[in-house]
Length: 171
Image (tube, rainbow, N blue to C red; front, side, top):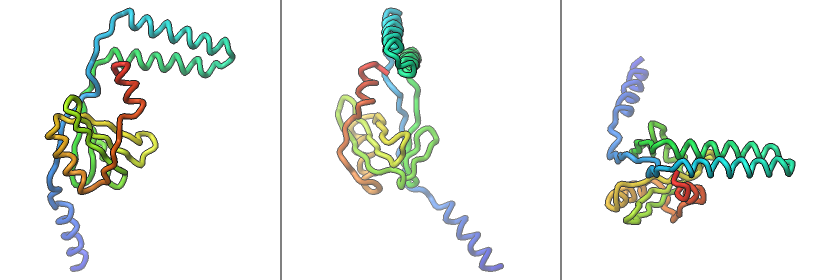
């Protein structure tokens, strides 16, 4: 019984141990650009023409995919940016309450571009292998970099094709 009580108390003390330094900040998904009705009409007409051509050439599934993608792009363009909370602590990276432990992260890179500083994270995940998180400013980027260098490998990374497309479309 004494050993059980000792283990129980030890577990409680380990769980209550302070987690150390935490870095947290808020990010928005994108800078919202107002679209005119003409833009939505052009998107819809392009999708209908492309889907029609695809169906005419005998590829029904691709036509459906084109319509679904155009609908998704239209809905993303219409809604405003969402705010997300991001945090770094001893356990890992937290985005909107979802914890990504350090063991699930491969590497990081802090792009300290003064116009648009970002944190790039590469994960072991299949669904989200790459994340790009905006930073507040260059000094914030230096703080995040110093913190992550103690826990992850630093590998130079650049924005991926999807990020370029989203930026081009204003999403």
